[in-house]
Image (cartoon, rainbow, N blue to C red; front, side, top):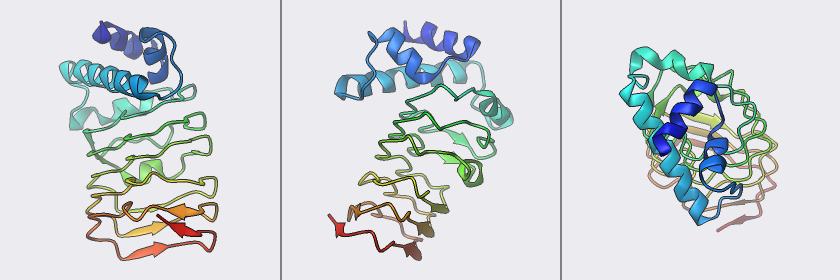
Amino acid sequence: SPLSIVEQFVRENISVDTIINKYYEDKCTLDKYTLVYAYIAINALYSFLEKNKLLHEENTTYWSHFDMSKVRNTTALLAFTDIPKANLKHWNMSRVQHMEGMFYKSTFNNDSICGWDVSSCLTFENMFRYCSSLKEITIPSSIETLGSSIFEGCSSLSSVGLSSGITSLADSMFNDCISLTSIEIPGTVKTIV
């Protein structure tokens, strides 16, 4: 069952994509089926963590112990979580290729992701969508594309610095960002679609 797979993940510190690959026939691309499976695996992980009272405020240090060095897929990993004091600074995100919906509707410590190396990431769609705790962010220069809804509904987002590698923006990426006062758009942006 997905829950027993997730329990193994927690015991052996196995990456999220390993769970998905092991349980769902070694798929490694995010086709529509793998995406569904990723959400199933993540939901099972949260059920396990909630059952063991690991998602509560007093247990936020638990998250800093995850070894993320081999993870390639963090799709929805922290979606719907309320972990404002969790320290994620030490997560090695250099191999992650998919961060779709990673912080969807979550509350987290903005400063704890500032130093992440996300240069291998291919997809950021919905990464921070409806994340009320995101206040400001600077996109690193290694990033060339952002998802169309990456910041949608980020009601506390006031400042965004975009990297010089970005060539196009989606006109919907800042929908409902009611606190947004500053966006640094580089000269490399040629189109807004």
